[in-house]
View 1: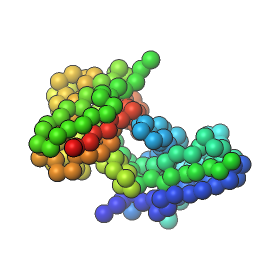
View 2 (view 1 turned 90 degrees about the vertical axis):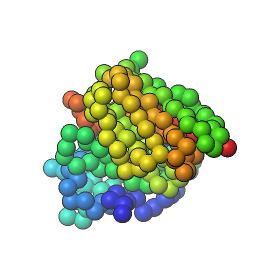
View 3 (view 1 turned 45 degrees about the vertical axis):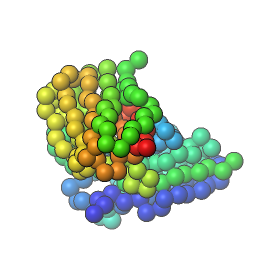
Length: 113
Length: 113
């Protein structure tokens, strides 16, 4: 049973336009959410995060929105650039000492020049 | 520079053999993790360790073993009992001061031939 779901395995966007990556979760105990970016054959790198006490967090071209009632979060990239082409993983964690992350299956973003 | 080093990057193993993947970090992080990535399945937690000489099973620990004799090192052994070991393996770590942000190594490709 997947607690974190990314239902779109792939997304293509034109350069300069907005990319919107979506993530849904089922565990209401999740209180912290993160987005990671991954290039082929490399480890994921942290992109942006949001605590459940907020509904928006912005960092440059990246904005994460959290809708707790819908158990949904999204990552907006504006404007999209070809270097943004990568797999994006959504992850969530519950309160606790281990802070283990539960990852979604990832969305391959392709930004077309 | 601080970081997580995984070795080898690529490894071939014959069926029936055990193989050990190395993970070393110089970030002074307390917690370390091993994840496995398979196509379309995101990252799944194999084992994690919060302190030296202690570790816990993750979601898919069967066929794997770990040790944590030193804070800096968290090797993963893929045993012959692991039925489908061909995958991309990622080691990660977190600081006790910022356990929300997980740092990943570059990954190791294991192929069983």
